[in-house]
Amino acid sequence: MTSALGFFVTIEGIEGSGKSALANALQHRLTSSCSRVLVTREPGGTAIGDVVRRILLDCKEVSDRAELLLFEAARAQHIEEIIKPALGRGDLVICDRYIDSTIAYQGYGRGIDFAIIERVNNFATKCMMPNLTILLDLPVQVGLARQTKVDRISAQGLEFHESVRRGYLDLAEADPERFVIINAARSFEEVLDEAAEIIATKAKVKL
Ligand code: TYD
Image (tube, rainbow, N blue to C red; front, side):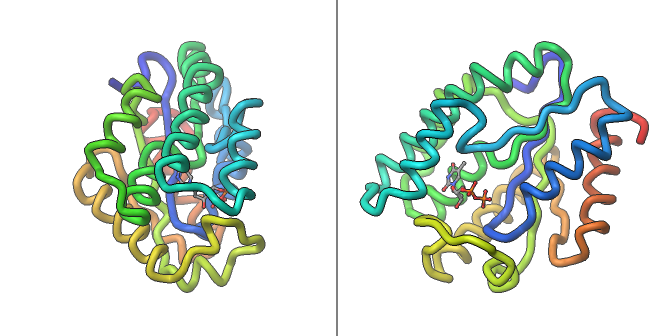
């Protein structure tokens, strides 16, 4: 199931790929063309999500299963409180991370069974799929070097982040209808121009 009225875009990528900066810049770039552009992010975006985010990123001891379920709890609230109502109003929703983050980080990174992740992703989102997913791809070393702050998850070793990147590329290859890969090793302006163009084309809005 994809959004009934609005247009739902997710932005995905490894640490330092520039998702958050891109999401904010897209809001400015697209606001004149769309009636309303909502930018939101996971985990976060709601009061519950912000608390869960702090637990997830700051607590030293979090088991892999607890980590998965905390991300999904934040997501369930986010879908209910923010994303579904916005799509119902006809907004263009741009979400920084969504279900593919969980497959890439908890599946490819932590090694949790993909069938379990699929079930909890579907349960948390009521099967609400993005219309478009932009994957910002770049070499892990380049992304990690760009990072300004480090938390429990981003502090994982190189091998973990390489698995996450591989996971994202596998997902994009398996679903070329939904995914577009953007080379994020280029300048921010180039990435922004390409992303804005892709969203405008897919969402059928004029830039
Ligand atoms: P955040 O500070 O928002 O990082 P970023 O700017 O890279 O998005 O923290 C989110 C972290 O949580 C990031 O390391 C990716 C991780 N994450 C998962 O492991 N699984 C998930 O399902 C989500 C949404 C995020």
